[in-house]
Length: 261
Image 1: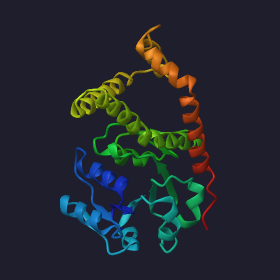
Image 2: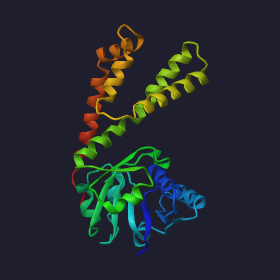
Image 3: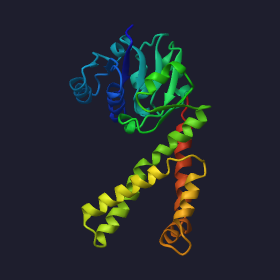
Image 4: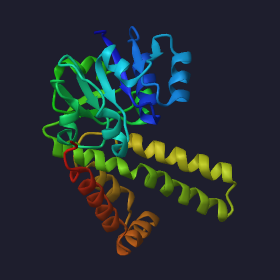
């Protein structure tokens, strides 16, 4: 069995993960891709010399030691059920399902972890939370970001649910930029300024302390000022309560998946 890194499923997250792995400092690993998404797999193999496309998903397993599962939850059972795993396989699941839901489909592989990887892994911009801790995976995950081993799967599920706010985050910025443009700002200026403001504010938030967001919010909301007016209006209308409710629903969806036979 080869030491190649295999990918079952080649969607947007897998594409970003492959790019992150092979462009990180140091020797690029050999990567073996599922052929199912032919266009994405072919594009990656043509772009990177150490990336190849296997003839089948089983060929990915046969030629790999570590295997990334990058499947939609709805498609996981159909894709995994026909496959024959090996005890030597180390499985890195990027599927938003509990490990227990996939366990019967991964046997007899003896090591399986869940990792939270976002498209920003191409730039290694943030931590890579994963569970359970497997020290031998650190060098691999370091090619995608800063490995962050977690205490339990509940912790991982909560962080995973938080990623469901990405689209809402961009929609928030879109609303701000569109509003500014509708009130007289040039559209390009509105978009560029809004994006730059978000980037700058996020950088400032990269400091120590679990109270950082509350503190920064208080500091920005000068009594009687403009920020106090807007955040007050949002709170009065229950915007943040609705956000918590939406996240609770996402977490329940992630945790409520029964084992797949």
